[in-house]
Amino acid sequence: MKKILFIFILTIVNLNQLYAKEINIYSHRQPFLINPFLEAFTSETGIKTNVVYSTKGLAQRLQAEGKNSPADVILTVDIGRLYIYEDNDLLSIIDSKILNENIPSHLRSPNNKWYGLSKRARVIVASKERVELNKIKNIEDLANPEWKGRICSRPGSHVYNRALMSSIIAAHGISSAEKWAKNLVNNLARRPQGNDRAQVKAIFEGQCDVSIINNYYFGKLKFSEDPVQREWAESVHLIFPNQGENERGAHVNISAGGVAKYSKNKELAIQLLEFLSGQKAQNLYGKINFEYPANDKIQPSDELQSWGVPREDKLPIIKIAELAPEAQKIIDRVGW
Picture 1 (cartoon, rainbow, N blue to C red):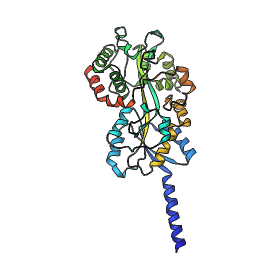
Picture 2: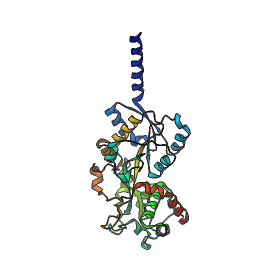
Picture 3: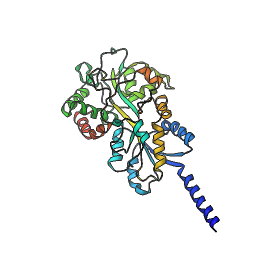
Picture 4: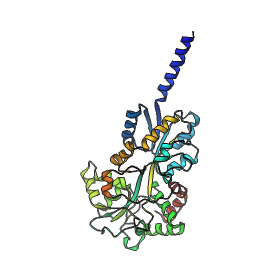
């Protein structure tokens, strides 16, 4: 009888271990962007990953599911989205020496509820034909009268531009930031429209001379399978703003991850985040996605280094999220 009971208990333990070798991920990142990372993680650890992908609504879904949620890991882009998860108490506190050592304090939650995993710089692109390389040095320069009718932009309310607006508020205060935004809008060659790729296309087509994009879009265009898109990339300078000796550095945003509050596999969820913060995954961010490593002990990819490695604004990234409501008010008032 004791032998049978022992075998029964051992079977249960083995089943639990088998179940625990699988984690569920709610992701705002497209599957083709994260699959190489997850495949490498599974190959190294044997832990299977299941991904639920959506561009929006995942926080609301997680909140509705409550304690019954199957989610273990949250992967997202933009600090504003992360802030929603933390503000709604949807994330667990993470206790990880590895993550604390790998990710600088300004790129993680003050409460250890999420960690930045990669960085993307908001950069300026300018026509090689119509703009001298050193003509623009700072993001503030785009408000100067000489650029009237020469700038294209995606809508200001998009999370990338709203985060940039937050960084300008942090640097200059609300009044000066609003003046900058108003002058930027006055300099637009057309109404705000399209995505970041569309801005480079507009420069190539001569609709405008200057725009603002995330740096990785330049890489995606440069190495596109479409030769026309490669021409778009070839037509522009890539300018990292605010690099002067007394300047704050380029504004950066992050992709990041956290552990779902009601995860049934918290240790394995943390293991995934630790893997994503380590050398193998951090190298992949540059090689696959043209993003900069959040782990400052890891060098950017050779391709990224060939563009230049920008000095970044070391503003705590959480401030970008905290200032987002004020940034949106300015964007609405100036009609960006």
